[in-house]
Image (cartoon, rainbow, N blue to C red):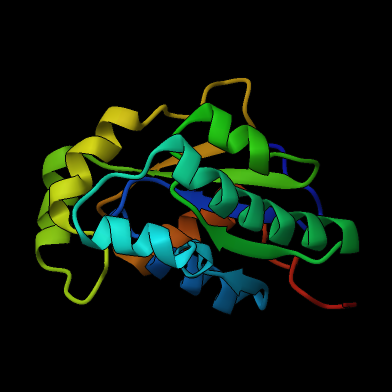
Length: 177
């Protein structure tokens, strides 16, 4: 089980289509915490590359991960809880984001389930054709990481509540900011 700080920053992670944005939005709303959508922190060149169906390289990801890490560090330094989405597919990516008070929440699902979700999603720059590359890159969090794994399949509201329950976050809201 993950260790939680009194006012953690949760990194909602997983492949595209796992429900990161929906679950993160529900969590942030229920807890009254700040929310950052990791996709919004991508440089325009990354978005264009993914939109064209080209997987990102590690070199493409570093500036994006550094932007997310800066958001996390600002929140943890201020003692302000928050929720941020980031695929964080590889351990070395999570190493950039990791810190005191950071908990990774891995939304795990089968390739078939996620593929079905992506097929029904419209208006997102990440095409379903890139899902295979995401699963190939995915390194699930290990026991040495401050993380919990949640199998997707329930409603997003139920998944958000399970995260709150498993991390004992009720009452750890944004009061006394």
